[in-house]
Length: 216
Image (cartoon, rainbow, N blue to C red):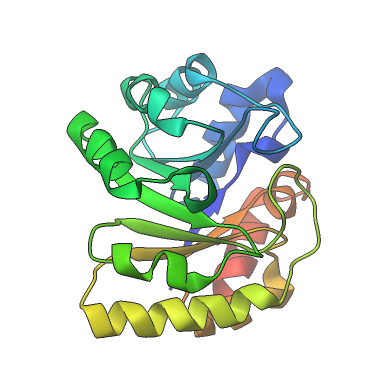
């Protein structure tokens, strides 16, 4: 059974605490927090102060996805704001092991994300160190994009590599996830489904989260 991590990028920020509380009551397992800097991706989102407010509104694990350049500069701030997982992008980290160490030193768990155009081979050597590997199934930077099927093969390759290495890392997928494709990505190896607009733009959060689980 996959974990469901609603992404607050699609929530109503005018009532963010209430939105977070609502998806927790609706059965969410994690809260996914997308952080964008306007450089690595062409959009801006939130910083540590907003994460701290989210942390105050929920007991769920906070899954923080840093879509930013030089993420190592902000690891401590996001950890202090309540991040349980901090995921950085392979594409902007020339020395991922040192970034992982910085994350671990804060007490948070390190993750690595790859964009649709980034080969799986770039993160396979890190599977024994990563707590989480995030496969982007859209190009990062905006919500409500269409799912890219190339992610299915990547999840399958990562699942096989995880088995070969004996890693205990979690495989997560983010982008265009809905009930119609949940089974496909879970069968390919996804343990965590990030769903933004699918949940927050639906009329019934609990029904949508249940549908994601039952479809998978």
